[in-house]
Image (cartoon, rainbow over all chains, first blue to last red; front, side, top):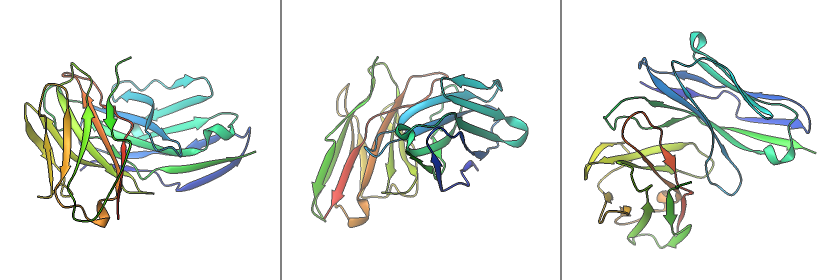
Length: 118
Length: 113
């Protein structure tokens, strides 16, 4: 079965602090996608990143960075120098990576609510 | 950049009424999905749809729910007789064939009173 765990339910940091959001996943698939989404108070899902299971390179995009470690089934997300606008719920997610079948539903973690205090 | 659109953005309905949530997937996409997020909870898969039929559905997707692609552009989710617990944000998603990820729409917030 596929499962995504985000152990941190809520995190509060003071502006300009760095913060890491943890994500651990379970899957029997050998190939899969991992994602992070941001959900601001307005409710939409904002896509942040997609990672293929065969690409373990870490990625940096501005103040955001992601650490993918297949050995520990983790895909952690770090925000450097946090800002008030980063306050949102962040979801880690997993889906299959298959050619034709539609058995590729996205499995979301429970989310981590991040509050950045000015 | 092409995007998935959903209408309405917010719908209020009375318990027992039928509602239809509408989605326009990205035009060349082949696979379509609905997800649900009850307030404060995680996003959950409801159903996937390919080649004009349901491919997979979750245990949430009971007989009160149905999906349809009535024309070449729309993808709809119908709830026949809404219950209070159907109040949630409903997200539509679509993807192209091959190794591509799903693109999510902005969601429809359904409130059942």
